[in-house]
Length: 125
Image: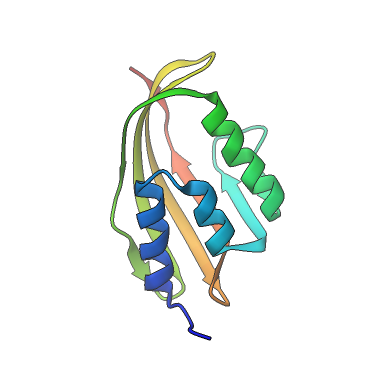
């Protein structure tokens, strides 16, 4: 069985996210006990468990009426951690068009992402 380094996990996540395959990234790369932290969210400030994290992600994409533009940076890796920057220009149902720049920090253990943290400041166009 081949092992994946943090760099390889980071590269795979970026590759899948750039292709819009976030759900596949979660299936392949996330630990079953993943913890997801949203700095500015009331409802999803801390989400635990793969099923709940997958549902949170699915709800975001259901809310997105149109993604006008998205960019995912190359990962920056340090030990068992990596970060990426995601930029989105998206129209959200009930909110309108939103520009989002997000710093995403991932923690890797036993070849799986076991924690993700999102830092962002949303603003309307």
